[in-house]
Length: 180
Image 1: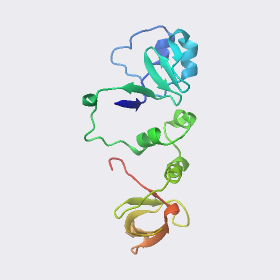
Image 2: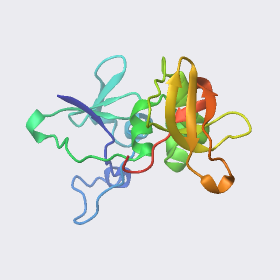
Image 3: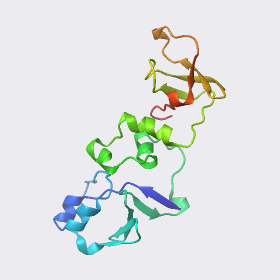
Image 4: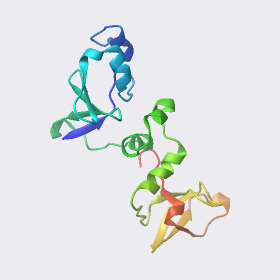
């Protein structure tokens, strides 16, 4: 199985000539920076194809992710609860700069993720968030879907909204909390 992951590279150790990492110190996960590696370790980097690079025997894509072949038995696939940020890092087409600035994508990328997909399909029970109109940022659960109209029951009864509200699909995005 081919997996795409965020590598842990200690650029300071490479620049100082250390081959092994310090005991007990684990570098933070960060995207592969080809230009920085070309400056500090030019002898060990080579293009593999038009969009991949090989550095010290490991393959990286132009987006900075490590591409690795692993056995299926080596993967842990049960009880995995990625955060929304982790899912966005691997699925959205957000630029490298946005992740390097603060490690997260902005709110416009969250909504862009939903709108850029071919068609978001809402089902009864989905947690959604309103992204357009006066009720922007309101969250709720889908109660009914009829054609292009999605009926939502707001989660916050303290706002005085106890009836279902109707929205179009382009006014909503699916909303996930950590662990959902």
